[in-house]
Image (cartoon, rainbow, N blue to C red; front, top):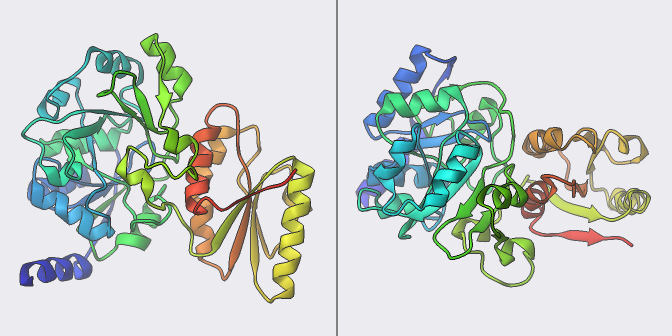
Amino acid sequence: MYQKMSERKFLKYMQTKIIKVETGHTGIAEAADVIRRGGLAAFPTETVYGLGADALNPQAAKKIYTAKGRPSDNPLIVHIAEWEDLFTVAREVPGEAKRLADAFWPGPLTMVMKKNERIPCETTGGLDTVAVRMPNHPAALSLIRQSGCPIAAPSANTSGRPSPTEAAHVVADLSGKIPVILDGGPVGIGIESTIIDLTEKTPVILRPGYITKEMLSQTLGRKVVIDSAVVAPDSGKIPKAPGMKYRHYAPRADLIVVTGERQKVVSKINELTDKNHADGRRTGVIATDETKHFYRADQIVSIGARADEDAIARHLYRILRDFDRGDTQIIYSESFATPRIGQAIMNRLLKAAGNHEIIVS
Protein backbone atom coordinates (compact mmCIF):
# COMPACT_ATOMS: atom_id res chain seq x y z
CA MET A 1 0.00 0.00 0.00
CA TYR A 2 2.80 2.44 0.93
CA GLN A 3 4.60 1.74 -2.35
CA LYS A 4 1.45 2.44 -4.41
CA MET A 5 0.78 5.68 -2.54
CA SER A 6 4.39 6.80 -2.98
CA GLU A 7 4.25 6.12 -6.72
CA ARG A 8 1.04 8.14 -7.07
CA LYS A 9 2.57 11.02 -5.12
CA PHE A 10 5.71 10.93 -7.26
CA LEU A 11 3.69 10.98 -10.47
CA LYS A 12 1.45 13.76 -9.21
CA TYR A 13 4.09 16.22 -8.03
CA MET A 14 7.12 15.73 -10.30
CA GLN A 15 8.35 18.59 -12.46
CA THR A 16 7.51 18.15 -16.14
CA LYS A 17 10.02 19.31 -18.75
CA ILE A 18 8.59 20.48 -22.09
CA ILE A 19 11.00 20.19 -25.04
CA LYS A 20 10.34 21.46 -28.54
CA VAL A 21 11.76 18.92 -30.94
CA GLU A 22 12.74 18.45 -34.53
CA THR A 23 14.22 15.34 -36.11
CA GLY A 24 17.58 14.66 -34.50
CA HIS A 25 17.03 17.19 -31.71
CA THR A 26 18.86 16.34 -28.48
CA GLY A 27 15.54 16.51 -26.63
CA ILE A 28 14.56 13.18 -28.19
CA ALA A 29 17.68 11.59 -26.69
CA GLU A 30 16.71 12.99 -23.30
CA ALA A 31 13.21 11.52 -23.54
CA ALA A 32 14.64 8.20 -24.76
CA ASP A 33 16.84 8.06 -21.69
CA VAL A 34 13.78 8.58 -19.47
CA ILE A 35 12.03 5.66 -21.18
CA ARG A 36 15.10 3.40 -20.88
CA ARG A 37 15.12 4.10 -17.15
CA GLY A 38 11.49 3.05 -16.79
CA GLY A 39 9.92 6.50 -16.94
CA LEU A 40 7.23 8.13 -19.08
CA ALA A 41 7.52 10.54 -21.99
CA ALA A 42 4.76 12.11 -24.07
CA PHE A 43 5.49 12.44 -27.78
CA PRO A 44 3.78 13.41 -31.04
CA THR A 45 2.56 10.94 -33.65
CA GLU A 46 0.64 11.57 -36.85
CA THR A 47 -2.65 10.67 -35.09
CA VAL A 48 -2.57 12.10 -31.54
CA TYR A 49 0.08 12.58 -28.86
CA GLY A 50 1.09 9.37 -27.09
CA LEU A 51 2.21 8.68 -23.52
CA GLY A 52 5.13 6.31 -23.88
CA ALA A 53 6.94 3.79 -21.71
CA ASP A 54 9.10 0.70 -22.29
CA ALA A 55 6.60 -1.90 -23.48
CA LEU A 56 8.76 -4.72 -22.10
CA ASN A 57 8.86 -3.27 -18.58
CA PRO A 58 5.76 -4.14 -16.50
CA GLN A 59 6.44 -1.45 -13.90
CA ALA A 60 6.78 1.19 -16.61
CA ALA A 61 3.46 0.10 -18.13
CA LYS A 62 1.81 0.45 -14.71
CA LYS A 63 2.98 4.05 -14.54
CA ILE A 64 1.00 4.82 -17.71
CA TYR A 65 -2.21 3.57 -16.12
CA THR A 66 -1.51 5.56 -12.95
CA ALA A 67 -0.69 8.82 -14.76
CA LYS A 68 -3.77 8.61 -16.99
CA GLY A 69 -6.18 7.15 -14.44
CA ARG A 70 -6.76 4.45 -17.06
CA PRO A 71 -8.61 1.18 -16.35
CA SER A 72 -6.07 -1.64 -16.09
CA ASP A 73 -7.98 -3.91 -18.51
CA ASN A 74 -7.56 -1.38 -21.35
CA PRO A 75 -4.56 -2.61 -23.42
CA LEU A 76 -1.74 -0.31 -24.51
CA ILE A 77 -0.72 -0.10 -28.16
CA VAL A 78 2.92 -1.01 -28.74
CA HIS A 79 4.81 1.29 -31.12
CA ILE A 80 7.74 0.00 -33.18
CA ALA A 81 10.10 1.62 -35.71
CA GLU A 82 11.12 -1.31 -37.94
CA TRP A 83 9.26 -4.31 -39.38
CA GLU A 84 11.70 -6.67 -37.66
CA ASP A 85 10.71 -5.22 -34.28
CA LEU A 86 7.32 -6.88 -34.66
CA PHE A 87 8.91 -10.26 -33.93
CA THR A 88 10.11 -8.89 -30.59
CA VAL A 89 6.54 -8.63 -29.34
CA ALA A 90 4.38 -11.01 -31.41
CA ARG A 91 4.35 -14.80 -31.16
CA GLU A 92 2.48 -15.30 -34.43
CA VAL A 93 2.86 -12.89 -37.35
CA PRO A 94 0.37 -13.85 -40.07
CA GLY A 95 1.26 -13.28 -43.70
CA GLU A 96 -1.52 -10.73 -43.99
CA ALA A 97 0.30 -8.55 -41.46
CA LYS A 98 3.16 -8.09 -43.92
CA ARG A 99 0.76 -7.12 -46.69
CA LEU A 100 -0.90 -4.54 -44.48
CA ALA A 101 2.44 -3.24 -43.21
CA ASP A 102 3.73 -2.83 -46.77
CA ALA A 103 0.62 -0.82 -47.62
CA PHE A 104 0.09 1.27 -44.47
CA TRP A 105 3.22 1.34 -42.27
CA PRO A 106 4.47 3.71 -41.11
CA GLY A 107 0.95 5.00 -40.64
CA PRO A 108 -2.29 5.02 -38.64
CA LEU A 109 -2.95 1.26 -38.58
CA THR A 110 -2.73 -0.94 -35.49
CA MET A 111 -2.65 -4.73 -35.91
CA VAL A 112 -3.63 -7.18 -33.16
CA MET A 113 -1.71 -10.48 -33.00
CA LYS A 114 -0.83 -13.15 -30.47
CA LYS A 115 1.76 -11.81 -28.03
CA ASN A 116 4.97 -13.53 -27.09
CA GLU A 117 6.39 -14.07 -23.61
CA ARG A 118 8.48 -10.88 -23.67
CA ILE A 119 5.42 -8.62 -23.55
CA PRO A 120 4.07 -8.42 -19.98
CA CYS A 121 0.38 -8.65 -19.19
CA GLU A 122 0.59 -5.13 -17.76
CA THR A 123 1.12 -3.86 -21.31
CA THR A 124 -1.68 -5.93 -22.88
CA GLY A 125 -4.33 -5.41 -20.20
CA GLY A 126 -4.11 -9.09 -19.27
CA LEU A 127 -4.87 -10.31 -22.80
CA ASP A 128 -2.85 -12.90 -24.73
CA THR A 129 -2.78 -10.59 -27.75
CA VAL A 130 -0.74 -7.49 -28.48
CA ALA A 131 -1.71 -4.42 -30.53
CA VAL A 132 1.16 -3.02 -32.60
CA ARG A 133 1.67 -0.09 -34.94
CA MET A 134 4.48 1.88 -36.58
CA PRO A 135 3.78 5.63 -36.32
CA ASN A 136 4.36 7.93 -39.28
CA HIS A 137 6.11 10.75 -37.43
CA PRO A 138 9.86 11.43 -37.46
CA ALA A 139 10.05 12.36 -33.76
CA ALA A 140 8.12 9.22 -32.73
CA LEU A 141 10.28 6.93 -34.86
CA SER A 142 13.46 8.57 -33.60
CA LEU A 143 12.28 8.20 -30.00
CA ILE A 144 11.60 4.48 -30.46
CA ARG A 145 14.97 3.88 -32.09
CA GLN A 146 16.93 5.86 -29.52
CA SER A 147 15.07 4.20 -26.64
CA GLY A 148 16.14 0.79 -27.91
CA CYS A 149 12.80 -0.81 -27.03
CA PRO A 150 9.24 -0.99 -28.30
CA ILE A 151 7.20 1.78 -26.71
CA ALA A 152 3.76 1.20 -25.22
CA ALA A 153 1.70 4.35 -25.72
CA PRO A 154 -1.97 5.20 -25.35
CA SER A 155 -3.06 8.79 -25.94
CA ALA A 156 -1.36 11.29 -23.61
CA ASN A 157 -4.44 12.56 -21.81
CA THR A 158 -6.37 11.95 -18.63
CA SER A 159 -8.53 8.89 -19.25
CA GLY A 160 -11.93 9.83 -20.67
CA ARG A 161 -10.87 13.31 -21.82
CA PRO A 162 -10.49 14.37 -25.48
CA SER A 163 -7.27 13.03 -26.95
CA PRO A 164 -4.40 15.54 -27.28
CA THR A 165 -3.59 16.86 -30.75
CA GLU A 166 -1.00 19.40 -29.58
CA ALA A 167 1.47 19.55 -26.71
CA ALA A 168 -0.59 22.13 -24.81
CA HIS A 169 -3.34 19.52 -24.39
CA VAL A 170 -0.83 17.13 -22.82
CA VAL A 171 0.38 19.86 -20.50
CA ALA A 172 -3.19 20.59 -19.40
CA ASP A 173 -3.80 16.96 -18.42
CA LEU A 174 -0.45 15.53 -17.37
CA SER A 175 1.87 18.35 -16.28
CA GLY A 176 3.32 17.37 -12.91
CA LYS A 177 2.54 13.70 -13.49
CA ILE A 178 5.18 12.79 -16.11
CA PRO A 179 8.85 13.77 -16.52
CA VAL A 180 8.93 15.01 -20.10
CA ILE A 181 6.74 16.14 -22.99
CA LEU A 182 8.14 16.36 -26.52
CA ASP A 183 6.42 19.23 -28.33
CA GLY A 184 6.29 18.47 -32.04
CA GLY A 185 3.52 20.92 -32.88
CA PRO A 186 -0.02 20.05 -33.99
CA VAL A 187 -0.60 16.51 -35.28
CA GLY A 188 -1.63 15.79 -38.86
CA ILE A 189 -4.59 13.41 -38.62
CA GLY A 190 -6.21 14.08 -35.26
CA ILE A 191 -8.01 10.79 -34.57
CA GLU A 192 -6.52 7.54 -33.35
CA SER A 193 -5.37 4.69 -35.56
CA THR A 194 -7.59 2.03 -37.06
CA ILE A 195 -7.30 -1.22 -35.08
CA ILE A 196 -7.66 -4.53 -36.97
CA ASP A 197 -7.64 -7.92 -35.26
CA LEU A 198 -5.75 -10.54 -37.29
CA THR A 199 -6.24 -13.39 -34.81
CA GLU A 200 -9.69 -14.31 -36.12
CA LYS A 201 -10.60 -16.27 -39.25
CA THR A 202 -12.01 -13.06 -40.73
CA PRO A 203 -10.11 -9.83 -39.95
CA VAL A 204 -12.15 -7.61 -37.62
CA ILE A 205 -11.91 -3.84 -37.25
CA LEU A 206 -12.06 -3.12 -33.52
CA ARG A 207 -11.77 0.66 -33.88
CA PRO A 208 -12.44 2.63 -37.09
CA GLY A 209 -9.88 5.20 -38.13
CA TYR A 210 -8.18 6.91 -41.04
CA ILE A 211 -7.46 3.56 -42.72
CA THR A 212 -10.92 2.43 -43.80
CA LYS A 213 -12.59 -0.95 -44.12
CA GLU A 214 -12.54 -0.60 -47.91
CA MET A 215 -8.80 0.11 -47.95
CA LEU A 216 -8.07 -2.92 -45.77
CA SER A 217 -10.33 -5.24 -47.74
CA GLN A 218 -8.79 -4.14 -51.03
CA THR A 219 -5.27 -4.69 -49.72
CA LEU A 220 -6.04 -8.15 -48.33
CA GLY A 221 -8.23 -9.18 -51.26
CA ARG A 222 -10.93 -10.51 -48.98
CA LYS A 223 -13.71 -9.60 -46.61
CA VAL A 224 -13.01 -7.45 -43.58
CA VAL A 225 -15.75 -6.86 -40.99
CA ILE A 226 -16.30 -4.24 -38.28
CA ASP A 227 -17.02 -5.35 -34.72
CA SER A 228 -20.82 -5.28 -34.44
CA ALA A 229 -20.64 -3.51 -31.08
CA VAL A 230 -18.80 -0.64 -32.79
CA VAL A 231 -21.36 -0.43 -35.60
CA ALA A 232 -24.29 -0.39 -33.15
CA PRO A 233 -23.01 1.04 -29.83
CA ASP A 234 -26.47 0.96 -28.24
CA SER A 235 -27.04 -2.72 -29.06
CA GLY A 236 -25.89 -3.91 -25.65
CA LYS A 237 -23.14 -6.02 -27.21
CA ILE A 238 -19.72 -5.91 -25.55
CA PRO A 239 -16.97 -4.51 -27.83
CA LYS A 240 -14.16 -6.96 -28.49
CA ALA A 241 -11.59 -4.24 -27.81
CA PRO A 242 -11.82 -3.60 -24.04
CA GLY A 243 -11.08 0.11 -24.41
CA MET A 244 -14.12 0.63 -26.66
CA LYS A 245 -16.51 -0.11 -23.80
CA TYR A 246 -15.40 3.02 -21.94
CA ARG A 247 -16.55 6.57 -22.53
CA HIS A 248 -13.78 8.57 -24.19
CA TYR A 249 -13.03 11.99 -25.62
CA ALA A 250 -15.63 13.77 -23.46
CA PRO A 251 -15.65 17.52 -22.79
CA ARG A 252 -16.79 18.71 -19.36
CA ALA A 253 -20.07 20.06 -20.71
CA ASP A 254 -22.90 17.73 -21.73
CA LEU A 255 -22.62 16.89 -25.44
CA ILE A 256 -25.53 15.89 -27.69
CA VAL A 257 -25.25 14.96 -31.37
CA VAL A 258 -28.16 15.97 -33.62
CA THR A 259 -28.50 13.96 -36.83
CA GLY A 260 -30.68 14.50 -39.88
CA GLU A 261 -31.27 16.74 -42.90
CA ARG A 262 -29.38 20.02 -42.54
CA GLN A 263 -32.28 22.45 -42.23
CA LYS A 264 -34.05 20.24 -39.69
CA VAL A 265 -30.85 19.86 -37.66
CA VAL A 266 -30.37 23.63 -37.53
CA SER A 267 -34.00 24.13 -36.50
CA LYS A 268 -33.80 21.47 -33.78
CA ILE A 269 -30.56 22.79 -32.32
CA ASN A 270 -31.93 26.34 -32.22
CA GLU A 271 -35.09 25.05 -30.53
CA LEU A 272 -33.02 23.26 -27.88
CA THR A 273 -30.75 26.26 -27.48
CA ASP A 274 -33.70 28.56 -26.86
CA LYS A 275 -35.09 26.21 -24.20
CA ASN A 276 -31.72 26.11 -22.44
CA HIS A 277 -31.42 29.89 -22.55
CA ALA A 278 -34.84 30.15 -20.93
CA ASP A 279 -33.50 27.96 -18.12
CA GLY A 280 -30.37 30.09 -17.78
CA ARG A 281 -27.97 27.53 -19.30
CA ARG A 282 -25.18 28.56 -21.63
CA THR A 283 -25.01 26.59 -24.87
CA GLY A 284 -22.48 25.82 -27.56
CA VAL A 285 -22.75 24.45 -31.09
CA ILE A 286 -20.27 22.54 -33.23
CA ALA A 287 -21.20 23.50 -36.78
CA THR A 288 -19.58 23.69 -40.21
CA ASP A 289 -18.54 26.64 -42.33
CA GLU A 290 -21.79 26.25 -44.23
CA THR A 291 -24.10 26.37 -41.19
CA LYS A 292 -22.38 28.38 -38.44
CA HIS A 293 -24.28 31.57 -39.32
CA PHE A 294 -27.69 29.97 -38.67
CA TYR A 295 -27.28 29.26 -34.94
CA ARG A 296 -28.22 31.28 -31.85
CA ALA A 297 -26.02 29.63 -29.20
CA ASP A 298 -23.63 31.45 -26.85
CA GLN A 299 -20.57 29.80 -28.40
CA ILE A 300 -20.59 28.64 -32.03
CA VAL A 301 -17.53 26.90 -33.46
CA SER A 302 -17.01 25.69 -37.01
CA ILE A 303 -15.19 22.41 -37.39
CA GLY A 304 -14.43 23.27 -41.04
CA ALA A 305 -16.04 22.79 -44.42
CA ARG A 306 -18.27 19.72 -44.52
CA ALA A 307 -16.51 18.42 -47.62
CA ASP A 308 -13.09 18.55 -45.90
CA GLU A 309 -13.11 15.32 -43.93
CA ASP A 310 -9.47 15.60 -42.95
CA ALA A 311 -10.04 19.02 -41.37
CA ILE A 312 -13.06 17.74 -39.42
CA ALA A 313 -11.01 14.88 -37.99
CA ARG A 314 -8.03 17.13 -37.26
CA HIS A 315 -10.11 19.78 -35.44
CA LEU A 316 -12.50 17.58 -33.46
CA TYR A 317 -10.56 17.04 -30.22
CA ARG A 318 -9.20 20.59 -30.15
CA ILE A 319 -12.73 21.98 -30.40
CA LEU A 320 -14.00 19.72 -27.63
CA ARG A 321 -11.17 20.96 -25.41
CA ASP A 322 -11.74 24.59 -26.38
CA PHE A 323 -15.25 24.42 -24.94
CA ASP A 324 -13.74 23.51 -21.58
CA ARG A 325 -12.06 26.91 -21.37
CA GLY A 326 -15.43 28.67 -21.23
CA ASP A 327 -18.55 28.25 -19.15
CA THR A 328 -20.65 26.37 -21.71
CA GLN A 329 -22.94 23.89 -19.98
CA ILE A 330 -24.38 21.98 -22.93
CA ILE A 331 -22.99 21.47 -26.45
CA TYR A 332 -24.98 20.48 -29.52
CA SER A 333 -23.08 19.07 -32.48
CA GLU A 334 -24.07 18.43 -36.03
CA SER A 335 -23.45 14.91 -37.31
CA PHE A 336 -20.43 14.40 -39.58
CA ALA A 337 -21.20 11.16 -41.40
CA THR A 338 -18.84 11.99 -44.24
CA PRO A 339 -18.19 9.48 -47.07
CA ARG A 340 -14.62 8.32 -46.39
CA ILE A 341 -13.71 8.56 -42.69
CA GLY A 342 -17.10 9.64 -41.39
CA GLN A 343 -17.53 6.41 -39.45
CA ALA A 344 -14.31 7.05 -37.54
CA ILE A 345 -15.25 10.68 -36.85
CA MET A 346 -18.73 9.73 -35.66
CA ASN A 347 -17.35 6.90 -33.52
CA ARG A 348 -15.28 9.45 -31.59
CA LEU A 349 -18.02 12.09 -31.47
CA LEU A 350 -20.72 9.70 -30.24
CA LYS A 351 -18.41 8.25 -27.58
CA ALA A 352 -17.69 11.80 -26.43
CA ALA A 353 -21.45 12.31 -26.17
CA GLY A 354 -22.00 9.04 -24.31
CA ASN A 355 -24.00 7.94 -27.40
CA HIS A 356 -26.56 10.71 -26.72
CA GLU A 357 -27.96 11.35 -30.20
CA ILE A 358 -31.14 13.04 -31.36
CA ILE A 359 -32.30 11.98 -34.81
CA VAL A 360 -34.63 14.45 -36.55
CA SER A 361 -36.74 13.45 -39.52
